[in-house]
Length: 169
Image 1 (tube, rainbow, N blue to C red):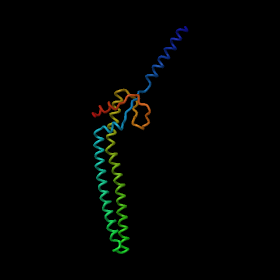
Image 2 (tube, helix red, strand yellow):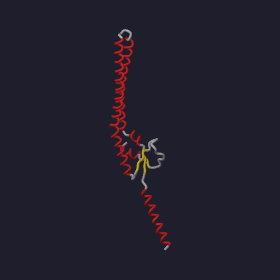
Image 3 (cartoon, rainbow, N blue to C red):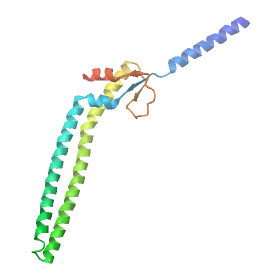
């Protein structure tokens, strides 16, 4: 009887331990930043943003050069024109300077909006590929392992190569 009880207890413990091991989740990791930077779509989006940024910068620099030329011109002519004209010119220069500042702010907003528009579908594509690979390999969780991202130990499966393969890169 005692022997049968020991076997029953051992069997219960064995089943419980097996269930616990099977209940543990599988975890993998991937450096999402590295994945995104390897995607051709991201390179094209970054090139488009750079081109747009250069266009805005050229326009603003042109306006700044024009403003500087007016400052110089008005400074040279200040002794030969009336006080009222100098005050009018000073107000004009302040208005132009204000317009340039507003243009810089608008350019920054436009660039941020364009970045969001370009990067959203790329991020969604990467996420879908990560989910597909994780599901195919039986992982319950995938952690972003980029440097400084909070991951301390990365001994689990790295999905980067598999996800790149899924994306064809």
